[in-house]
Length: 295
Image (cartoon, rainbow, N blue to C red; front, side, top):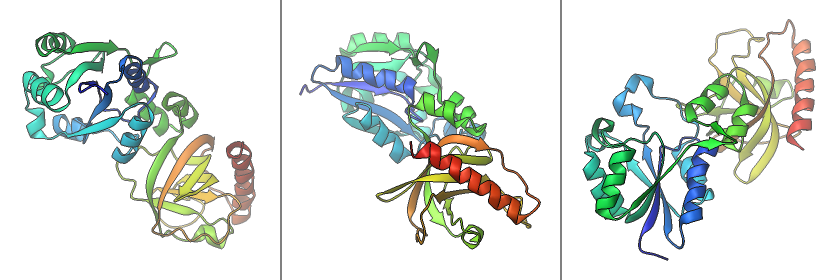
């Protein structure tokens, strides 16, 4: 393998189909060179616009895993702090791309900027490449002729349009957390759910009922998923994300790491006049979720 590398740069939240264009291009041209995905954590807006930090489509751990699945041999994570944000474009090129990553090709999206106050752009990067002996490959983040962005996918998820989000991500949207103790009401009515906690900062779909999957350790189950405040039952409570592993009984999942993937939106959250009406609807939801998620 060559001593130089192909460096693909991006925040890569979601590692969606647009990002995959950059990573696929890297594989096309690598010719024995190592492919390094250079990403940033936390999101740059944490420094530039703290009140506008977007929710994440992927945790950092998921992002790294997905970048490796999509052709990166290595993933370099730069801590995006005030010191890094103050770095000049020239210093970013010389100290990061050249000295640390040994770039001989740099692949970026066409709107790429870098350095203090985003002073660096594609034109300056190409000039720096001529001085430091690397080429610059600029790609549009497009798939099937449409531009794909993390913000667009985020909006779809928040609106509950998880099927559309799934198409742009190339996989179901997912939340990662820990199973926490809830009100145990599901257990009492025959539908014990895993209540997902530790999901702050992730992009949570709109309130409603979904079909998808629950993963805990090596176990992977089709699931009916509920997001909302359980309005049929009295009492004030915050939004909860709960998954019922279809046809599973006696599971002890408390305090275990878990993931919920959202395949299909089934219906909005409703308030029922009686427990009996709710149970009839829950059976319909589970039947529909089973039909979809077990395909």
